Figure 1 (cartoon, rainbow, N blue to C red):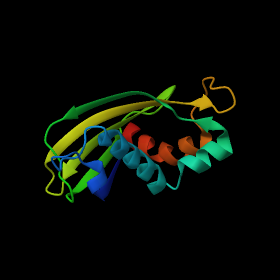
Figure 2: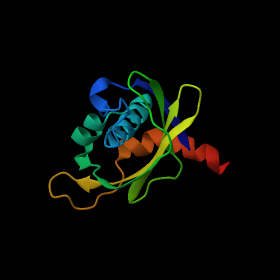
Figure 3: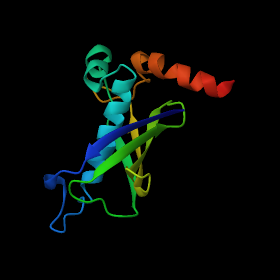
Figure 4: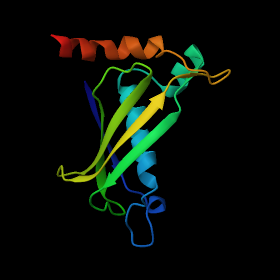
Length: 140
């Protein structure tokens, strides 16, 4: 299992008229969490795509709104990869206040496809190499 946290401040352009984080902005926060988790492992989406020719489109997104986040509030984006990815990869996301209070939770499922024709693909070797140690620890 991999758990990664990234701090982000809610920007004015991400809020609605009430100064509350706009509901559509949460998907972007989930993406920030995924990208930063991979970056913390020494990977970037761009490098994986360029080297492997494999893309990872989102095929489902579920979210639960619990409490509002406000303009200029610092939040924590916690991203968790609980299960070894096979034909898809599922990221669990939580948005929390600085004090740990849960604001929002979500789950994003991505699949692996070849860039040339969008046919299904295996998990890129670059990802396997970086995440394997975290899952080997779980098997012990």
